[in-house]
Length: 75
Image (cartoon, rainbow, N blue to C red; front, side, top):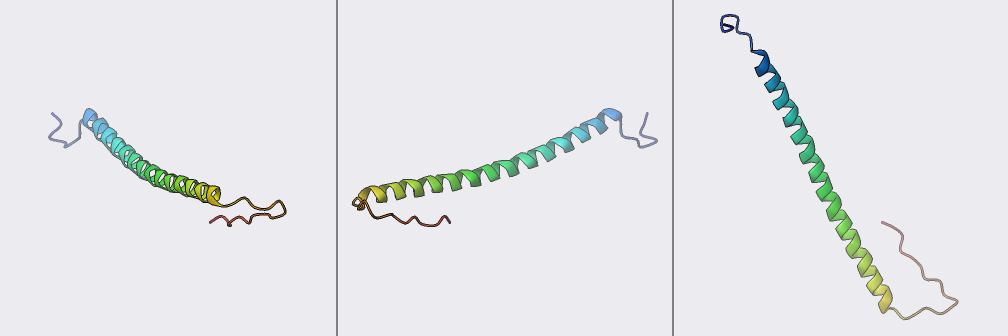
């Protein structure tokens, strides 16, 4: 029996290594999911801004042929 030498059985070592790897994977996946959530929020906001800008442009009277509309600089 290995209790006298206090060695950890090989299957238990492998199991602990596997658990450690899985915990690292879960942590990376959580971080990735959070980043994707932030990206979705930013893209949704950008979509709303674009729709709002299109709506405002449609409400403006057409410009004369010799007038060039100025665009807002990107933010």
